[in-house]
Amino acid sequence: DGGITQSPKYLFRKEGQNVTLSCEQNLNHDAMYWYRQDPGQGLRLIYYSQIVNDFQKGDIAEGYSVSREKKESFPLTVTSAQKNPTAFYLCASSMEAGGRYGYTFGSGTRLTVV
Amino acid sequence: GQQLNQSPQSMFIQEGEDVSMNCTSSSIFNTWLWYKQDPGEGPVLLIALYKAGELTSNGRLTAQFGITRKDSFLNISASIPSDVGIYFCAGRYNNAGNMLTFGGGTRLMVKP
Image 1 (cartoon, each protein chain N blue to C red):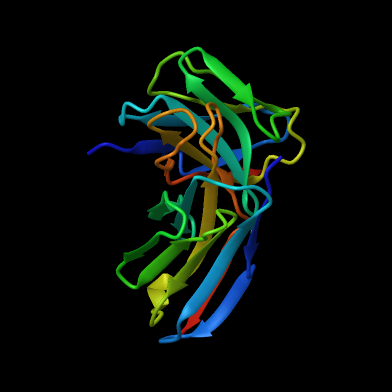
Image 2: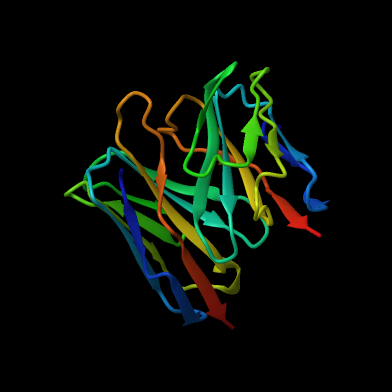
């Protein structure tokens, strides 16, 4: 079945460490997105990519980095520069840039700094 | 930039009651979408609307694309405990490069 897979589901990070969250889709979607969700809050856009080898900053890109070397993969690295990384991270993809037909979301990764 | 105001922010209702929530935008949209997020999971698309005035149902859920193109409504009839979650609206104007704008979400709690 086609879908979007995020791993791991739960991730613990020590302060000062970089961690990478995986996002893979087999939907043949062109565009991919990363969102951050804090408890009781909405979705905030971190980075997005509308095509392979290209990506753009979202509203809260500081302390994060991404790559888009393959169409199906869009990993997110949370760097030590991100001062408050504990959050729920959601990856999404859409058939075309813009998502007129909606985004398909993964099941999320919960990152906790210990 | 575009702003989406979703209300109410939260609702605590009795099982069997009907629920209404809405989103309003500062600018017009060509697409309105409604998502539901179960606790600890990613949002799932419930209903997509593409035409002003359009009314679409999905089981006990009904959504409408406002005729001004600046608002949308979601109704849930006869709520059940599994309706618990966060409901998000999302809108988009069909310009090249435009992305979805998400509302802040409505947290629904259902008392059995």
